[in-house]
Amino acid sequence: MISKILIANRGEIALRVARTCREMDIRTVIAHSAADRGSPAMEYADEAVQIGPPEPRRSYLNAAAIVEAALQTGADAIHPGYGFLSEDPDFAEICEAAGLTFIGPRPSLIKDLGDKAEARRIAAAGGLRVLPGSEHAPGSVGEAMLVADEIGYPVIIKAVAGGGGRGITLVRRRQEFAAAYAEASANAQAVFGDSRVYVERFLEHARHIEAQILGDRHGDVVHLGIRDCSVQRRRQKLIEETPPPDLDPVTAERIALAAAAAAGHAGYTGAGTYEFLLDEHGDFYFIETNCRIQVEHPVTEMVTGVDIVREQILIASGERMSIRQSDVLQRGASIECRVNAEDPERGFMPASGTLERFEIPGGPFTRIDTQCRPGFTVPPYYDSLLAKAVVWAPDREQAIARMDRVLADFTVSGPRVATTIPFLREVLAHPLFRSGKHTTSLLDQMLDQS
Image 1 (cartoon, helix red, strand yellow):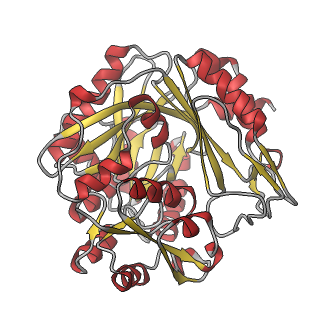
Image 2 (tube, rainbow, N blue to C red):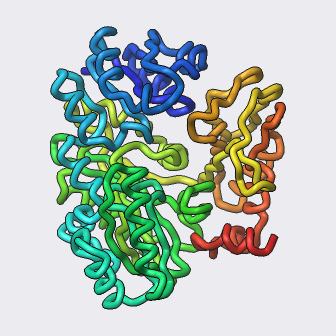
């Protein structure tokens, strides 16, 4: 069994992982930047090591510094959380070469599934339907345009190395394609260090559905149900929920079982998600696999009672998961809202500063994942997430009411600090969201009307 884990991440996910480790009697080391010195996660862990200055590339993206910190502190495993190096196959490989257990899938699988074109091929071989598009990364704009002409517009151009909603360009007309292709390739190179892109049909009026998967090294794969992540702004999720509203249980089960079968075919180990677009006819299409724990994992934990981080650690230790598919029972409904330090009145510009007041709501069946507190300065170097508000209720209607009350009870203030809380409450009150008939275009519709 793993005895000491270095957590190579920050914020609420670092604190969340450390808490499960304490319950499992596993010692923890927080690898932190200079900007996160004195953070709650650092104070909670058994040890802390500064790995660099505030800039991510010199700290949380510095693989050598992280591995050296693990070796110096006697850690035998690294938990990468989400973001940063969590889906970097080179980092996973470096960990293994140094004799450290990487808590995630094996490096070769991260590499294959991180290549979005290759992931499409693997998914199709595993029985999943994919949207019409490139079978491989086109070698030129001409080759890419031939694919677009064949599948029909609108199309999206995606970065092969992209993920998390980044590296996607929508093209509605053929005359726009060449310029969009050049821009998408340049952006992919700048953001991911890989200029390769591929083309895929754009699905209008779709819902974003994802299946939570766990696979161990003994060949067992289970799903923990599916989540709806359709409330997005510029393909960045704001609200997630389970079970997906207005979706019949038969279709939901089909998606979850198909994802589990595809994960088994791929030899998936660890926690991950298979993501899909669901059209208005109930057909679902694979879009990508995330080889890590997701920001929105708490809603699944709330309805299943499964600690996903605990299962990650058991799997990485070579043990069997503590659950089988027959053990997974889903009860009630859960919703998560991401409270970000952004100003919706100014185009969602980051609005970080020092928090004078930060009072989190309580009440029944309410979970707030955060590392913030009064006096905490929100660093400008990282993402704008302040907290994740998560609720559970016997049904969706009560969950929405509870979440609205939780957001109303949230108190966040400070010089230059603004949050997405008012906007999140607007979304919760929107008729399309209330009816469960919203798609990924909901926020665009709301912002166009404002």
